[in-house]
Image (cartoon, rainbow, N blue to C red; front, side, top):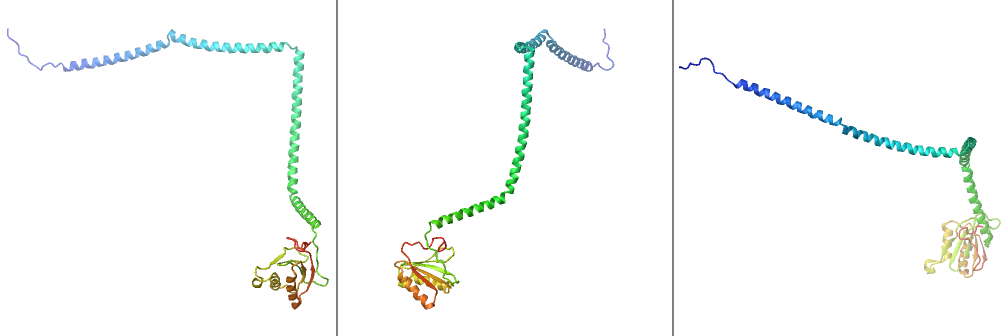
Length: 277
């Protein structure tokens, strides 16, 4: 038998293989989606399972038991209160309520009185502050008067204890005057009738070189231009030599003066007031 010769194109299986591969991929994807849906349904079924319901019911039962215990405790307290109230008759309870209402009214009235009194005190305080502000100038003047009174009282006390003799200008002299206390090496000078600290003239260690207290006093008269003033010379024991020097100068220049002799312990000049009273 002889073979027949083939004629026409050859058959290719590549297109069929592509179709088979695509269909297989689609089937696999569908299977995966079905498996995922099955898993989700299983979890949902587990949530709706009797075990989940029992767990929810157990939790709810616990909450209800706690609420029941709270209500029972509240009921017990209410019963105790009712038993206490049951010991009193309605009349006694009404009397107690009436007494409490009266006490409340009294407290309200007392509170109102206290509020009014507080307002009155506030008004008085404001008025007192205003009056105090208005009295400040008077208080200042009063303080000044008190200080002046104390100073005057102090001066009076000092005057009582002061045993110094008070000297004045001779009649007819109006040029001013000075009290001169002459000691052996020191001379003190203070104005007559005027408060002033005494001026002190001290003799130096070498009178022939540095000069005597008398020479210093005479120089002061010249420098201060007091040649026409009146000088009362009060001579202590030991001051005769100084007095002679001064008297010689006064005689030469016709200076108005007078003199007297005083003791060594006689108080003549005050440390602050000088010859003034």
